[in-house]
Image (cartoon, rainbow, N blue to C red; front, side):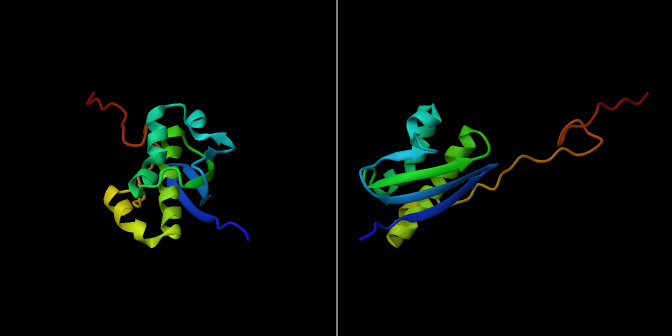
Length: 130
């Protein structure tokens, strides 16, 4: 019998993460690299584990993640959303703890584009009366 694989997609800033979740021993790989090695900073590694800790099953699933775009912080946020969405497919009862922790909410903030005639998105050139 084949093993069930649950899929979730997460986005943050410019990052897109595709998460594939299956039952296992708690191995998490990001782009075929162990997650702690890929993310470098321990704070980002804890962000990735947060949905599993909210559900209370840290070592119950093997997670394979493909992520591209953006920086490490944006990628970690995208992975967290993708894992939370995949956990919902596993069990709908996980919705309450994940929603209360705020892991199912998409962070819609993005970098504002630069406008013409200005040095940046909001900044204006210095005004002089004379």
